Image: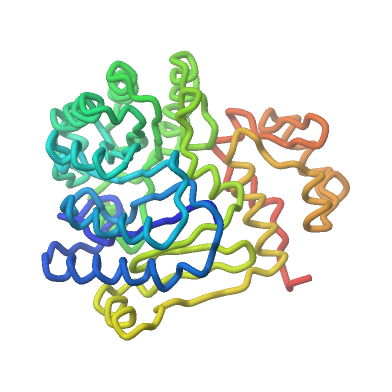
Length: 378
């Protein structure tokens, strides 16, 4: 184990593009926090390894009070061996960042922020039903730097209907000018069972323009590279030394513990997840039970995940490892697919290392699926 993922399932309002489930009941939040501290103790025997990353994610952990966060962090430190230099990340939204709160986070040892900015344009934020303004988006970055949390990532969304190329360029330029050292940029996705999905189906909203999104992506890769932010994963760009240690470990298949409602964990051979319902989660923990569902990953599933996560990174995949760990002779079995990707400029093969080019990165998930082991196990 190298990390702990803490899922905080609370947000203040609905989001147009993801339709999250929200709750702001103080009583329920306190109950979940209390259950989190108990779960941390219940899982303490799952690892004796040093924990190198702690990640508070899920809804918006930034809405928790300093006291609530302190209770969870104290429970983690009490039950696990935490590296003194551990990366401790907190997801938050711009409207939850104040100088007083940011000072409290830093005092607790939180040394990295993941801020859901999405856009520096009010019209985009309004369309996505975000609670913050463009001014708050800019100000939260300045506040974080003022109190000493220079290690941060901001989320940006491209492919938004009616987003012009100039809009996208301005978003990226603004982030760079603010001195952001890490950017996570995602293409807008439309899920069929969300409010946005229903509006697109009824013709009330435009679907994502894939061609425009591809142009946004290509420009982003080149522009950020020119500013010193290297693309180390399809959606993630960082200056040297500011790559996410937690996510990098996840992409490398390193085990991690998960705490909280709907949190997902991995122990190297199996995946587990907690019940998503907050009251059910709390009730189970309060009676001394872990509300967990577990599945052992087959060789096929572990191979597919290795391909999927590996090809999304700048490092790509080591075909020799495919042979040694999964008994899959990549060069022999997938020779036609590899040659096609190389010939159309989507991939490079240097020795045993298969990596995707800028062109291939935009289509990474589709390319990876071509290498999946399908059908019956073994």
